[in-house]
Image 1: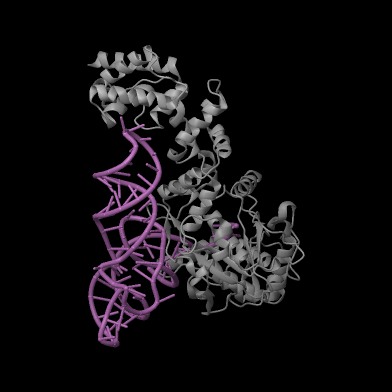
Image 2: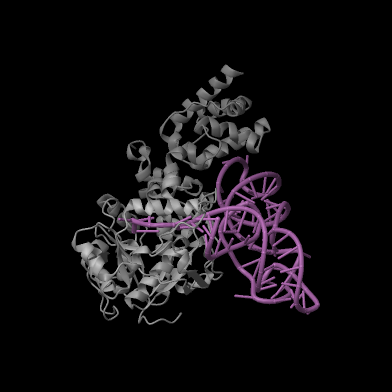
Amino acid sequence: MPENSFKKVRTRIAPSPTGNLHLGTVRTALYNLLYAKCHDGDFLFRLEDTDRERSTEEFTNEILDGFEWLNISWDDPSSEDAPEGATMTGLVEDNIIKQSQREAIHKNYIQKLLDEGKAYRCFATKEELDALRAQQQANKEITRYDNRSRSVSKEESDKLAEEGKAFVVRLNLGTDRDITWNDLVRGEMSINTKDLGGDPVIQKSSGQVLYNFAVVVDDFAMQISHIFRGEDHLSNTAKQIAIYNALGFSVPEFGHLPLIFTQDKQKLSKRKHGDIASVNTYKKQGYLPEALVNYLVATSYTDETIGEVFTVDEAADEFEIDDISKSPAIYDIKKLNWFNREYISKLDYSDILSFCKDFSKYLLANTKYDGDKIKLMLEGVQDSIDKFEQIDTHIGYFFEDFTVINEKEIKTLEEGKQIIEKILILIDHDGINFDEPASFKTGLDTIGKILKLSGKKLFMPVRIAISGKTSGPDLGLIAHLIGKEKIIERLRIAVAEAVKTA
RNA sequence: GCCCCCAUCGUCUAGUGGCCUAGGACAUUCGGUUUUCAUCCGAACAACAGGGAUUCGAAUUCCCUUGGGGGUACCA
């Protein structure tokens, strides 16, 4: 573990309730959680709800529900072994620290910086700043704030403020200075203050404190020792380190994680890529939280000893920050589906049943089948579903009649007409016992011998006739579940269809 | 524009100077098992972006080029 002055490893996830829970947020949370767990540290949660215009209660609940569904929980920041001096201000129910509860504290620190001359008021109007930018563009210069208000005297500044002139507060970054840190994922990092766009605003003219500032005050107050976040925060980190220094706080360790990309190699964003970025989508489609979590951790992280399929606890035992990749990971829904299948196939029947019930209109309205038959039915399709949303397409024919419209399938029916007719005769002579799943198959076997047919040629027409599909569980099982009467009906229809089109 | 980051099969990655004619997983294709289906098993396909340098030896170190991405707010 890298050394710093913090007494204990404490990490956090700090989502902002300005949108629904994002896959990237979850992955960031997971790596922070894993790092804390493998160092016997704490993993905390802070809600960054200071943007009053965009933050909503609805998003807050959605984020919290999402984490709960994923079984990601955080520690109590006020627990007995919390580091000395760690704040409890802003702590609300469920171990959540709300940033909006800490505004007074943020403002005190702004004032402190102002008093110490490390920050200053900037009275430049929007028009002034626009003109500056236009001028810089005309001169082909880099557009950035020129730190003009640094030179305003303290007296002047106080006077203007007293007169009620609007101002923002900016942090004095100094001149041409490299801000460096040893990034836990990327190694030595260095960003020059002149590339930061001028002295950053830390308090808006409305009096509201800005993200970069509030984060630093809160992270230090919470005694956060390690911060893992997306690499899109790289330049924020430079500004934040400057703020840590100005405030005289010890600086935590930073690690910048690779981003998740979409197929088109853009940052996975809710705005551009819609639902696929939102955790809720996966919940609604019937993914298992364990599978989603596993997939998310496994992109950008591999460990030979735990392999591909693992739980958070298993990963926490072996977690090494060095095993995190530096390059972005392209989001691959097929791989996620594979993970989900893996987890579904391992589920106990009671879980299968309860998930299927949540996603199936047929099971909801079921009066046809008893519990034993439902069990046979669901176990028959368990291995073939990617996500529970698909359940009804796999079991629909057990509940509802269908029409074969696919030309290829109709052709198969025609070709197998004789087989189907023979089965009907066999059933008519009580040659098949529908109480026995094996019986139907034995009957087919006999017919196959008579007609000198086997394999696909023998089975596929029957499969299509009784299920309307080319794949599914064992034929004997299907016949057993659907029952004599219905099977006869479907076989007769199939013969009629074959005749009609022949 | 400027700053920063990244670069191995289609995708996720293993690989930290010789064990690499580059390994695994997903996907794809083809076989086998299951007389059908699913599963399972086997196989095939397929990559070190390019150029220099260092070295007896480079996917691995350094430099350049190229490509991709991120940032550049009184958002978080």
